[in-house]
Each structure stands twice: as structure tokens, then as C-alpha cells.
Length: 170
Image 1: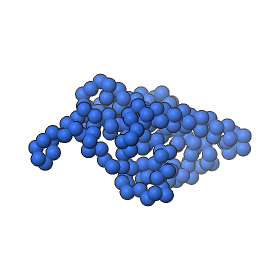
Image 2: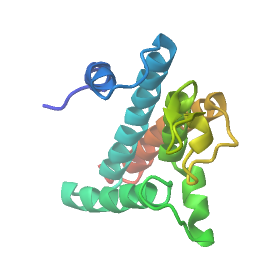
Image 3: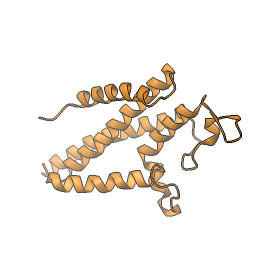
Image 4: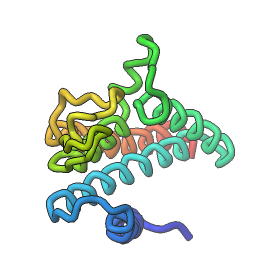
């Protein structure tokens, strides 16, 4: 018996609520709720990619193989795993939901945080943003893009379900 969409969101919120404070992130309510919202949207899109792969294939094994390659591409070229992305693969990062979720979360946590450098002076952590994160987009724009990608994924799930029914895949 599979769990419903709402059960997955509840589990995501419970996990993030515990994990956020265990990781020692900033104790700011706005940053905490933004963290929950971004990871909930991330979870919805991730679940959607899995559902689309499952809908469009006849066997679970084939769906898992396709999903593995899709997620590996998204992880590799979003700047999370690989920092020197070849120019011909940059477009993958631009369409990846992980890129925008990661950028929003890192920017949120580093804003207002000060770290001590080797010389003993304090610097704002946001100035030390990793180069693979596109700092030109604000937190709000990253979240807005993530919302749009989440809506597009919901439309994609419905479209793939309709196509699978129409072409008798399921």
C-alpha cells in the first residue's frame, strides 16, 4: 500500500523540523519556514519525476533505471556535485529544480551569518558563496522558479497519465 501525496509532505515536514535544528542552522523563524517550504516543493517535484517515469514505462525495473539516469543528470549538472560544468551541459542546470532549491537554501542560510576567516576578522558568509551557485538570482526569484517548476511537474504528471491511458500503456 503506497502512501498518499499528503503523507509524504507530512513526513517531509517532520523530518525537516527535526533536521534543521540538529544541523545547527540559524534560529530564525523566517529561515526555518522557508527551509520547510523549499524542501516540500523539492519533494513534490522529485516525487513527480518518479511518478512520470512509473507512468510512462510498463515495468517498475525500467522506471527505476530511467529515474536513476534522470536524477543523476540533474544532480551532476546542477552545481551540487560537479562545480566545473562544461558549457554544453549548462542548460541542464538551468532547467533543474535542484539548482533553484539549493541556491535558495544556501542564500537563505548564509545571509546574516558571519564567519571568522584566517586573519581573525569576521566576514559575511554570503560573500563567500560557492561559485557553482548563481548568486545573481534572489532567494525570492529562486523560490518563484521552484514554484513554477512544481506547477509544471503537476501538469506533466497529468499529461503523462492522460497519454499513458490514451495509448494503453497502463
